[in-house]
Amino acid sequence: MKHCVVTGGAGFIGSHLAEALLARGDRVSVVDDESTGTIQNLSGVLDHPDLSYTKGSVADRPLIRSLLADADEVYHMAAAVGVALIASSPVRTIETNIYPTELLLEELAQRHAGGHRVKLFLASTSEVYGKNPKPQWHEEEDLVFGPTTRPRWSYGVSKAIDEFLALAYCREQGLPVVVGRFFNVVGPRQTGAYGMVLPRFVEAALKGGPLVVHDDGRQVRCFAHVSDVIRAVLALMDTPRAVGQVFNIGSDQPVSILELAREVIAAVGGPLEIRFQSYAEAYSEDFEDCRRRVPDLTRLRSTIHFQPRYGLKETIREVVRWKRHQFLQSPPPGDAPRGTP
Image (cartoon, rainbow, N blue to C red; front, side, top):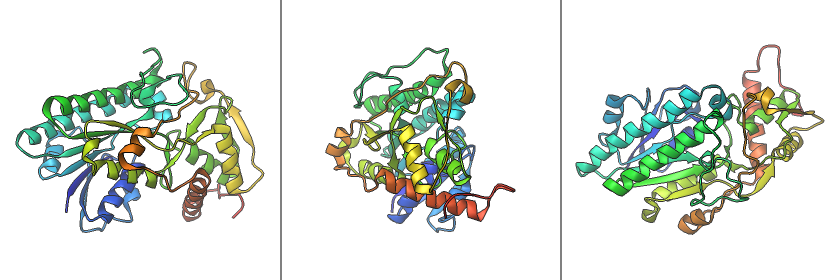
């Protein structure tokens, strides 16, 4: 039985990861400050005998040191999340992403120096590519960011610093590190509160619309089901030659945001309005976005033979079912869900 520590384990992806680790027979310690995650995401496993949960911060060195004392693997999922949070709170974004990662690496390096090999998975993001204009991104692409006067890019830059730090510890001290760049992970438990587009669309559709599409809706993204992403993460951590490498993780099937809105409407049942909103109205006058974000998954596929099990339509239907169930359990006062049952 491995002892796995999951930071940010009460978040959307982290909670699914914690469940998967328990399902394969590991002992799991979750730490989360619940700033964007919620313990309710772990409700299905909170009474599991091999799960321990701590509400706390990865920036708390004594806490992290105690959790790492007998750890075999660490999955660092804790980070600032969502475009809305990044745009409104750049200071929080930068501090949340960089300092806890540095602290975690320092503590892991101490254990490593003492003869204890603890493997680290660092969750990174497609945001590190910035606004690289290429139609598809592989892991060795240049990172292209906007000016420092545009807080939009602070998230990608801070996560890139995390990657540089982790890979530096790997090169200089032999710390076993695997870096995964997530591309638009979606599925049950994801909230639209921080600007995540699919849950935001589904929530709006179940309330009767409108679905608000930013800019012209021609932005292109790729959406991967969270269970496919978790399978990839676990496979990479079980593959020795993945150590010291960076991997794009997600789907490589592109769809425009406007097409995504139409697919959600089709899944919920219709007719629902699509309304367009400028970035200035949604975020700020100086907000910038990337028009196209499509990963090259060649490295991932050649390393673990990755093949997703979920397509976009099936993923949307599952998110709709989950959101509808949540709405029926606790509809907002005076705002019962509408749409075709």
